[in-house]
Length: 114
Image 1 (cartoon, rainbow, N blue to C red):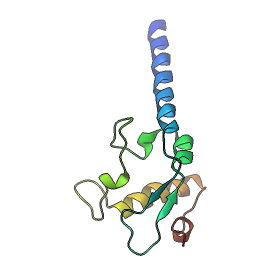
Image 2 (cartoon, rainbow, N blue to C red; image 1 turned 120 degrees about the vertical axis):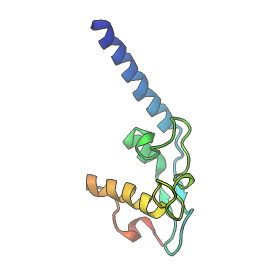
Image 3 (cartoon, rainbow, N blue to C red; image 1 turned 120 degrees about the horizontal axis):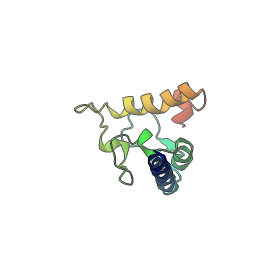
Image 4 (cartoon, helix red, strand yellow; image 1 turned 90 degrees about the vertical axis):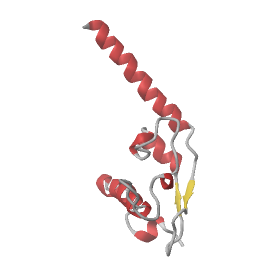
């Protein structure tokens, strides 16, 4: 039992260390402009969010660690298969997280700045 506990501790340290290393490689900022219709593009502090969240899979939920893609690779202008449309995915994930944590922008012009 003691060996199992030690092994689990080593695995947990490795998992958390790997996610922090990957987050360290995250781009500082990105501009989300793939599917803009009427609102300005969104400047996103990617690295700050990656550092705070700590797990890339929280947002890049279908990608293997180290192989994260842009959200628009799966989320298109219109719903495709089981992937929600881009606008819905961003609003649900980003705005939803801000509402849940009671921190961060939740109004249109707070993200889509002119």
